[in-house]
Image (tube, rainbow, N blue to C red; front, side):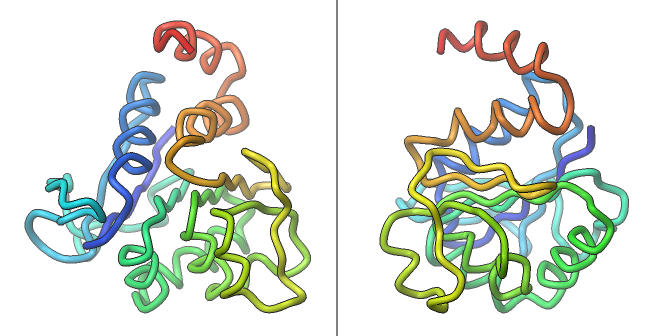
Length: 180
């Protein structure tokens, strides 16, 4: 599987790194694309170095598009025309999309959440329209959409992504290796 994970200044570092690391343990081809060139300063000041920049990739080359949360990163995803178009394209093509924490707001901006079952960080629902509201579950799968709540659910999110998009057996193998 080829996964695309964008990051931006203010992305939640635990969510991004746990997702990237766990998918790579499953032997996925993971590309971390910064929305800007250079080092990204995550939400708690951790410096992350993307593999490339968004303008150097073609989202059509990927099977899965996953957004880490963090309000700064989420706001960047909401404003970034390329990320928004990729989300709409993945959704229209039935390709896997995932978000964790506040990144549900970027999915909503792309028009993906209406009529869907999803979850996000508690309190984020206040920034969503009243007809688009989350359920309070750790990880939710609705068709080709996988969502999760926050930093503490990042491992469960990553393992569910592996199980749903690739192989339940590979997910169990990775879980065992992580001692979860």
